[in-house]
Length: 283
Ligand SMILES: [Ca+2]
Image (tube, rainbow, N blue to C red):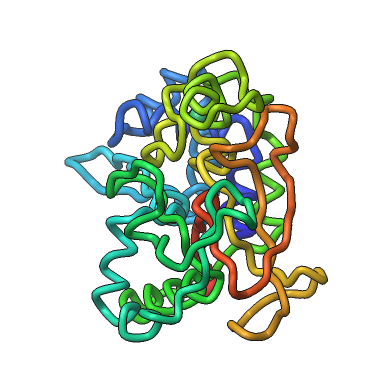
């Protein structure tokens, strides 16, 4: 991911991506005019973005057109519809009947083996992030996706998560799906903000604005990362006593840190925790 982060670190390059996000397929001339930058400068930034595989180009007549090829960052959010492909393609055979007890709203007293990713006890559509997934299932999904596509996928390292999440807003119901008035009402809580972001529990992925091109890094669900509770890197299931989750979710108060970390035993899943995968671009 390093190339991607380096590419996204520059404000001019983010402006170029924003411009292509608004209108895909622009020429160098159009991009320079829209951003009031010299062609040389735009050309240099486009080369960096292309090397990071964030954009691609196609010729049309004498023009070279630039397209947002956000696959490496857009593919990072795993939602239920996608997870079902894995489940039907081998996940069920591997994990069915071995699913961990899924906690509702992170309470040990609301732990149930009857709850699972297909029945998480919160209202969800297929375009919501998948929850009630164990660390082992998330890691198995990444491996499966790698075999399907011939590319390398994995859970993000905590530092990778933090690099983006540390740029999150404070959480005012417009930047992320956190605990809000809708949450307070549904769960008879006072933890949420007075404002309403429209979602008591999970929301569709990509509903709130991306940070550095990464959607849902803040809010919606907390996420499993490739780390053991003791801080060492977690690579395979069974290698840790417990596993780390990062970030804020739909039950998080706005005062909580966007780089929050917690650890859960390998036999726990939660309806507030999902995952994303990152694709390594260096192979
Ligand atoms: Ca909410």
